[in-house]
View 1 (cartoon, rainbow, N blue to C red):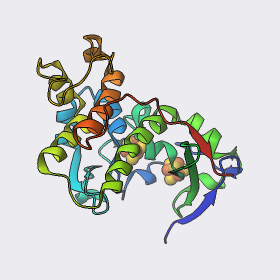
View 2 (cartoon, rainbow, N blue to C red):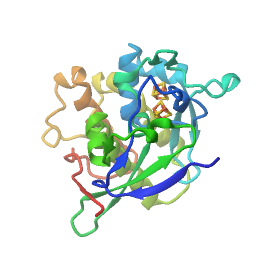
View 3 (cartoon, rainbow, N blue to C red):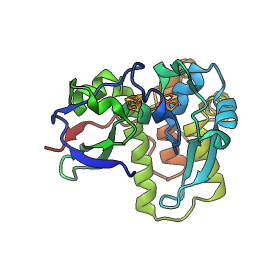
Length: 259
Ligand code: SF4
Ligand code: SF4
């Protein structure tokens, strides 16, 4: 049976609670097609103590999105066994503290658009009711806002919105694929942060394309060890190198919600 998807305001109440005691425990961790955003990968590779390159090679598949023409990275599910997530165990998710944003959000979906007048990002929510999910039988009252807070989604939303800025930049340029070298740089900087760190460590970094250190005060030795600063730089660098936009470190986007 198809899931029932209902638009939801961020303050509308719904009944839901998830627990290992439910008969559906782990049922939502199979039969998935799960795309991973760059911040999902950063969290997962650290949780598993892998380099980003090893994580990508072991746990993901890569294809080109038909709409965007950009690389799309998905978890490589075991097709022999009902497309089970590689991280699910009988006791639950083995990367629970660092699980991807879509796992945290479920049973919600979150989309964004931009208010052209204010430049702020507008959040939209929907509730996904799947027949196998028993969480809706629980009478615990939730709202989208409270659910996101409880599930630790704040940094995920912040960095995913930063990434979506790049996607919309590409969408404004047209549907086709990037030139192969630009596609490689987009993938490496955003998804393979440890390779990007190696690039930043090279003396030639900042010369091609030229980076004015005054514009980028974080181009300092600390950057190599501050992974989140490096991650923000990767987004700014992709803006310049792949999309020929000025290299500036934008503050994280601010939000408003649909009412
Ligand atoms: S209640 Fe829903 S989210 Fe929780 S384990 Fe069951 S199927 Fe998954
Ligand atoms: S990452 Fe964890 S929560 Fe998400 S599908 Fe896999 S096992 Fe389930």
